[in-house]
Amino acid sequence: MGRVAYGDESVRRSGVSESVYFLGTYIADEDQSDLADALSVYVRQGGKLHWRDHTPRTKRAVCETISEHNAKYLVVAASPIPEGKGEERARQQALHCLSVMLEGDFGVDSLILERRQQTQDEKDKRTIALAQRNKVLTSGFRLTHRFGHEDKHLWVPDQVIGALGDHWAGSDAGDNWSMIADRVWVERIDPRR
Image (tube, rainbow, N blue to C red; front, top):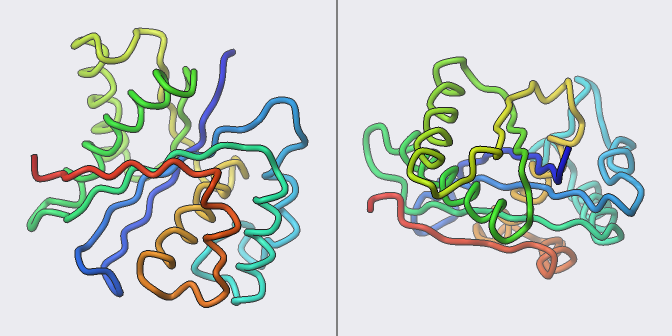
């Protein structure tokens, strides 16, 4: 198996001038200890790690832990989210951009996203299949979905996009984003196009 990226999503509507759909990934460094294991110490009841559930002190500790690992991250920020069914449209455009960049710029050939509803996951698969038919992605690129409680690697991008969302919303009181910003490639797209 080649290089793997783990992805999660977040939508930010408050505190930002225009609503934004974040689709972010954690690309593990195979030569270093696992960041997901290191972050496991911050799991509270419920068995998953969610940025929105953290205290300010925990957010800072999480970002310090992330900064100590040599992983890379790619976040696609789709904004503004179109009215109506715009959130799903933003996701599919973000997924297309993210997948092409993961394969072309990071050498990733497998993307694992947190599972949503089956119909939504099927839309993701159709987006990847279309990109492959159009020769934008190779036929070897794979997309799978897993529940967050099944794979703790999916917790990592939640932390990164949570810190980015707080930063964009002006609610990053601990300046957490500055600890990890140099490791994160943020690609902005307009999903209305």
